[in-house]
Length: 235
Image 1 (tube, rainbow, N blue to C red):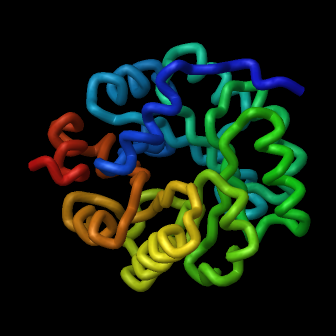
Image 2: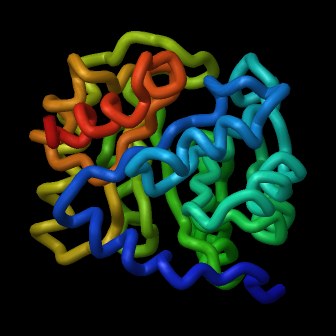
């Protein structure tokens, strides 16, 4: 299968992340009845990515949406689509989300056995591959995968529900991943999801975070444009 969607600014996003934290609003916190409005709101800010939390009701309790939602959003925007598969047996879903136009597909360490194979498959499709870990999973568990992945997503809350408070101890994982990347010359981005807001953004930035997922803090903000600048540390 060949990658169907190529976006000219994709590599520029990777370069920019070295200087400033990427903000990826999660549409999980948006109004599902008006997703186009949510996309246009994200586009009106300095956000670079859109984060899409896919939940199957098995790996996590909640159910959200599937690849058709990603396909619809792909038709609305050229922003980077960051798909996070919180599902059991993600290998059964990879092709669908690749065809739908995902730029990143991130799967969970805890969700499948043959992760090396699945990450290779994602990359063979021309998609950036990510690995995610829940709060109870240590960074050491994914050391063998770090040379392969384009993104490591650290869950700062137990996945499945939005609006939770960050687990502070999980921030140490960001710093550890940053140190490993520097020591071995790895190329992955470090992203995090859960409880990142104007009160906690400075903590994750200081730890070395490249991309922050923002749900309720973005869509619940009085001024989302200003909120993004605060999260980035510009103001």
